Amino acid sequence: MPLMQALTLALQQLDFGQNAEKLQESYTEMMGKMVALRTPGQFVLALLVTGLVAPIGEELTFRGVMLRFSARRARSMVFPVLITAVMFSLFHFSNIHALLPIALMGALLAMIVYWTRSLWCSILGHLIFNAVQVVALYFATDEERARMLTDQEVPSPLLLAGAAVVFIAALIGLYRTRTPLERGWAADFTPEELAAREEERQRQTPM
Image (cartoon, rainbow, N blue to C red):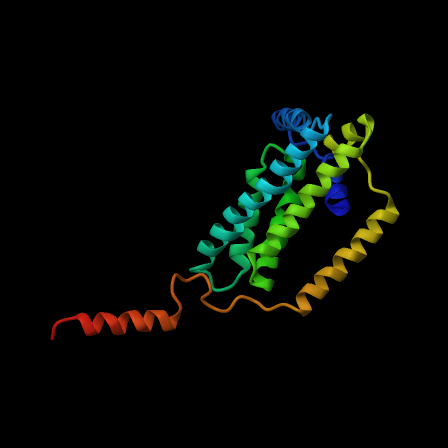
C-alpha cells in the first residue's frame, strides 16, 4: 500500500490535462462522501461495501471471468494478465492518478490466482487491501483523512523501505511455493472429459 501511495503521488506531478483533473476532483469528492465515516454504523457499512462486496465482485469479474476467457486462446499468461490488469484499471478510470498503480495491482492479483490456483487468495488480498484503507480513514483525523483522499499523504522513507522489503520477500516466497494452473485450465472441459463425451456420442450414433 505505501508503494502504491508513493507511485500515485509521483504521478500527480504529471499534467494529464484540465478534463482529467476535473474528473479526479469529482472522484475525490465522491469518495469523500462515501467514506465520511462519522459514526460506527457508517464505518460498518463502508467496511461491508468497500472492504467486502467490492473486492468479491471485482475479483469474480476480472480474475474469475475475464482472466479465464482471455486465457483460452493465449499461449502464455502474459496476455491474460496484462489485458485484465488494463481492464481493471480502466474500471477505476475516474481515479486518474492511480491508473498505473491499480493496473499493477491488477496484474499482481492475476498472478496470485495463476500461482496459487485459487481465486480465494486474490479475493483475500483485495479484501485486506480495501479494508485496511477503510479502517485507516475511520481512525484518522479530519486533516489526515483529507490528505489520504487527495493522495497527499507522503509515506516516510523508512516506511517505503520496509514496505519494499516485505513486498519483495512475499513475492519471492509466493513464487518459490507456486503451484501454477495447469495447461488448458481455462477450457470448459478437461481432455478426459472431452474424450468421454466423444465416446458417449459415438455410442449413441446409429451405425
